[in-house]
Image 1 (tube, one colour):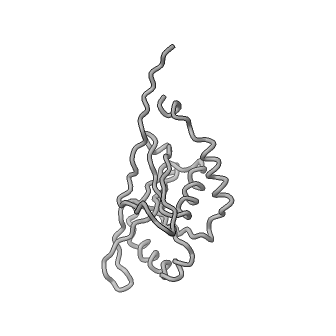
Image 2: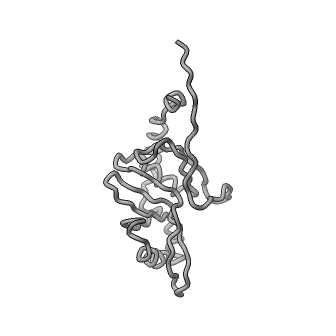
Image 3: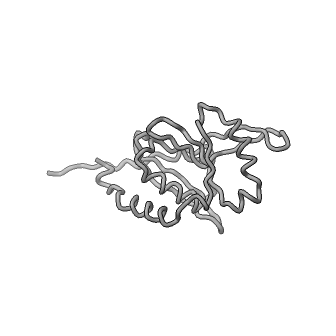
Length: 166
């Protein structure tokens, strides 16, 4: 019984902006992910250890339908009233259809850059058809042990190449 299997690689990331591949201070990478909202496995990129931890914790949830890394930029007015844009780290949609725009930053940077005020302006300008809500995730929100366990769980549940090809 000779069975021909053809491997079809994952779809590329649908990110609207490229992440820099090299950094001396931050983790960069990508995961191949299969979610109910994806027609086939897709690459999702991350550009920090915080984003990776968030992604692992999110991917083990059973109510996640779709994740868009680096989605379309949102136009808003900055503190001086000048037009500018913000690209969220992820747009996460649950199986109930609720899209949430997620910004992920270290708490120290949130404080230094007064990012909460900026995010409030961004949230007001975010179209409802883009996201129902905006969420800020910092290192103080994420449980590193739970994220490490989620990463192990994802690694254990990862299908083999022959399962992917079938």
